Length: 148
Image (cartoon, rainbow, N blue to C red; front, side, top):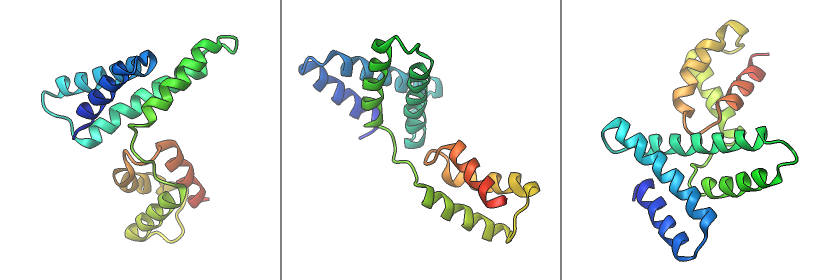
C-alpha cells in the first residue's frame, strides 16, 4: 500500500474519531502527495513520497522556529502537526551508519587521508547512497570531521 492510500485511511479514521487537528494535517499531506503525483503525471516512487513528507516536516519546523515566542498557539499547533507527520516519515540513518557509509566511500575512492580538496569527490559519491535516508547537513558535518 502506497503512502497516499495509507494517509487517506488514517485521515478517514481521524474523521471518524472527530480529531480535527489530525485530519487537517493528514489532509494537507495527502494534498501535497497528490499534487506531486499530478506534476509528475504518474505514480510516485517510495523515495519521492518520502521526499514530499520530509518537505512537509521541514516546512512545519521552519514555521515553528519563526513563530514569535509569545505565540504559543502556533508553536503548539506545529508540534502536533510534526507528531502526525513523523508517523509517515522514513527512518533516518544513525550517525554510526552514516560514518560507515563514509568509510566505504573513502575505501572505494582509495582515499586514506582525505584532504579538504577531496570533499567534493567524497560528497558526490556519498550522497546518492544516503539520499532520502539521512539529513544532508549531518552528512556534510560528518564528512568535514573525517577530512580534518
